[in-house]
Image (cartoon, rainbow, N blue to C red; front, side, top):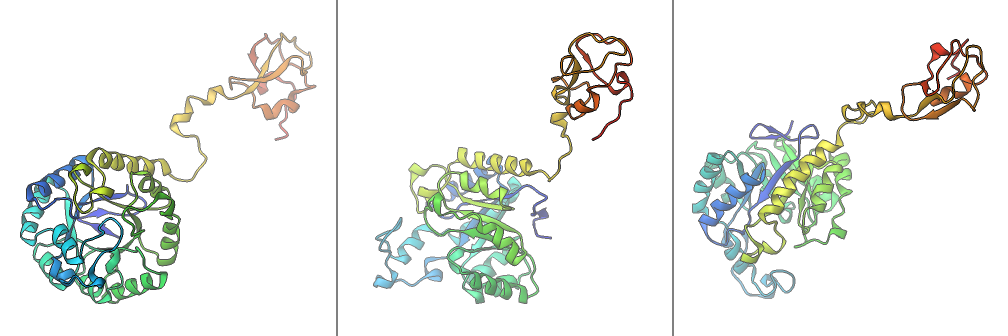
Length: 352
């Protein structure tokens, strides 16, 4: 059973919504605290950080290998980008305490061994492996050895790489692993979301699956629930107009609130497979069709298409009995507009 902070995460429970803060604090701890408050107010189950420094995730260099030449962060070096986007480690304790005070789960994505050790000191309840790190099997093994629940994003990974990452985690004895389908485009066009991959992930690896979504809006994330997503992760910010490294593809508070409501309702709408009459339908059974006498009929008179008809409401015999009734005699006098029931028909026998 996969769970974080005693919150069970599976198809029998509503999807677990993770609000990803990333670098949207814009270097202000008060804004980071406000983001945690916002995630809680919007109905998210957890808020997630990223734990690295520019020096733990890359090298300080402006060589071509380390320059971003296209996309959202074009023109930055990797070191500059991560210096801008990182969450200062000295904030973490305060943010963890604030989340505990607000009763919302907080955990993080570590990007090297020192980050894992640091997060262990804070008693992080779970870990997230980012999609770019899913090929870093030494890091995955190190995290898995904590015994904590792990969520791994699969962006850009081949099926073989996903299998290898899982095998490494499982080899430590840690079976608390979930996979998030992810397209690592920032933002990702909805047409490239490929949500059906969720079905294959679940079937192939037999672990809880979810979606780390980088599309704009909430449509893809909401739709993922119908395909089995038990976890939904989205970046969020207080306002896209405020800028920041991830602001362009992040949800604003009203959108995050709508997402939380949508995934909850989508999960409820799935229900269970079955054809029994639901409570909402019970009162409408009376409006289905049934057989009614349309003209007055004397005792002994035969029922014909001239005096019996299938109409609404449904208090008489079901329409399928029409041919069981035709040609039979009335047991008693029957007034027009009377529901035709079996006790009004001589020698009534159902052939269906």
